[in-house]
Image 1 (cartoon, rainbow, N blue to C red):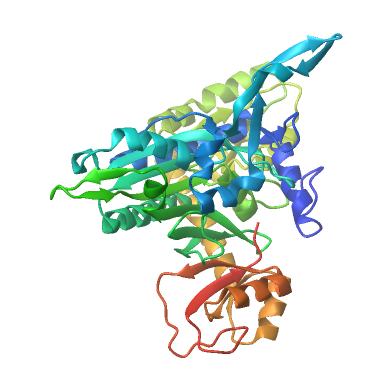
Image 2 (tube, rainbow, N blue to C red):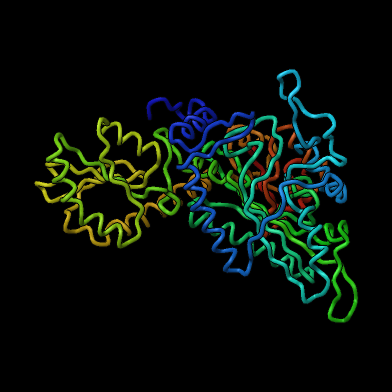
Length: 488
């Protein structure tokens, strides 16, 4: 166990916060509920962001930027949408301050004619612009993504998982047909699954949300759901088919090839910095982070062990072939020759920060023509001759990437249960895990289970087999097979 880190088994919530602060991923901002993302944490976000951005552009999406401020009247145009966000909105009511009796106060004369909402999401402001831009079928599709911050005024916050302001991407697309829009929404879900599984090494379940869990204003919400280390679920990404709801609210029509007039079809989709929270909770242990190599800011750290400057110089000369090999393979590495810090201190620090590979080099290793390395994903030290390093570490990083995914997949599968007994269901939920079971499709049953157990339907898998399935609660014929879990 790392010094100053609460063991996961004692208090998973405290462990999570300890790891974030000790690994220097983030800190608390001066306004309650806000978060400062520190350079190490932001570097992880950049790796995730860059991969998503590349895949979006490879599928013909383009980036744009829309205003942070939204007129309140825009939100009122789509009733279901505004109801979903009303309690989370930050509202700007005045435009300036003034000094009064040596105190800074709001100038009452600067009250705005119409209050302004700090964006909780951008559907309304974007659709106001799409009305200007869309006239004909020739203008479609519009495939726009935005990298931005949003504000949702949270009462109970947790770093990365739930903060009043967070970073995300939000895609907003407009199409001439329903089929094209649905294909778009599902295509994005596939991108989300690919990046989260293959870059972040986090296995996910895919499906769509129940009526009560879907995005406000959506016809259908598709999702990826991940299991955290405490066996709770985390919604890792969502893609929404919006139908013509926003087009009708903002009167966005286009002229078809047959010269008819029709409302456009829409999608929206997003992932956020909560993915960093998922990364911590899926892979972390009592020593701190364990980062998949593809998102690790530093993939390999080299710690020289020396007693004098002369020894240090010998070690630097000795490891130059390593540096060349790493540069050639675009490996992100750091040579930690900081003075006044013991090797043990450095080992603990890099273990806490989840660096996939740590290399130790001392005078004894030079004499042996070797180096010693440790993998963060597994216990134990390994020795390799300096002349045998060609191709070794790129392959090792690939192996660690796969190993972390396999460990997380095994954990997810071993904690996913099927049952047709409501008593068993309640026991499993209490202990933690996913429950695959039947549901009769009624809001009443869903709400009773939620009230009973605090578990919600995380997703309705795309592939359904309900022929002989009974509802876990009502014992009537199941309409859907679903995944229930407690969630963040």
